[in-house]
Image (cartoon, rainbow, N blue to C red; front, side, top):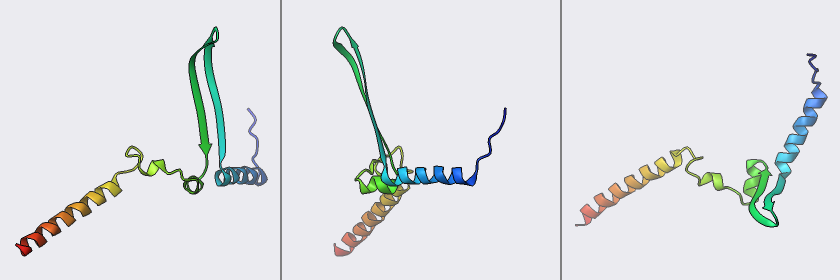
Length: 98
């Protein structure tokens, strides 16, 4: 098996293409339909968006930030800790007022 040498020019072109795709974004769309005797049994709509995180957020797509399965939970834990600290502080202030 002969190995092909990759030149810097080829790598740069691939990097440029990848950078351009991520910067501009690309949408791939397609539909799959299963029919028997003109009766539609199944339709699958496929939509794929490939873009950088910055470009996706610019387009208003940021669902991964609220998805608990994708977030690491550190922000949620920090918010809960802050909430608990504020509740304790309010309780102490209410006790002073009494």
